[in-house]
Image (cartoon, rainbow, N blue to C red):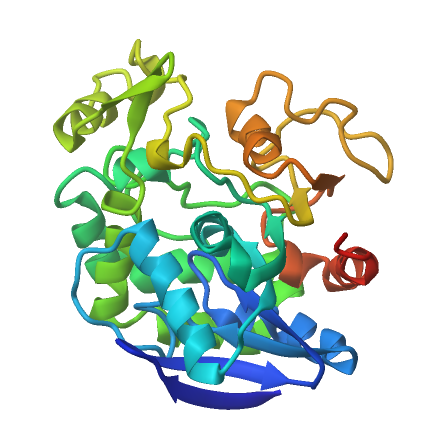
Length: 339
């Protein structure tokens, strides 16, 4: 796998590339970089020209301090394709990469052969993902990343206990559950990579922007929507009993009301874990009714009518935790005809 750069209309992108054939783009999530796809870039390069870019603000890609929206990030992806001369491609997105991919294929369907989502959402936020609320409280994320960025990465990818304070100062625990050992999944090279990547204050800015501006919360009112201002989210977060005790917490807020009536007819795949779709899994397979009672999951079937689903009873970091499983799933799905 080669480390490459390319200049688009507005950004200089860093990306990893390997292989020849039909183009396949892999988009990373938070708090990672395109390095999270290192296994798939290599393994899938025997059949595809694989490209894994660092998205705006992360890794080796430019970090202009601009307001970030999902439309901007989708436009970045199209510009990246244009800079490489890719008229059409398949795209796979994990976490935030999936949120970018969904916007891109809904707004630019003619540019994509198919789309796969790995443990993400596409238009509706999951209320148990507390970081989505926390990022909107002015000052909290800024202070946390300035003081604790290394401890955060060390805990998440190395299992090293952290000494940072809990809620409301941050939404994450400072200890992992007994028996959890992410160092087995990621290894020392990955830990050091993410330490370096998340030591950059410009990346901290983009972490905050992605969630604060890129995920505007709305309450659904039938076929219309009501914007929930950040000041209201802040009051919810600072509730004396914690946000979980706030009477309005628990509703599934929509962050892409403008996409309500958009559909992508091409092949789509949703690989999910209990992070996004909690509940019991059948051995070796998906939920029988994966979207029941979960509007965030149901939104995939609405926007992507040609959808397949696969459940994985593991952690959120599927590309690194279960690379062989994901490789098999993607190969089978990518081999299917598009029509």
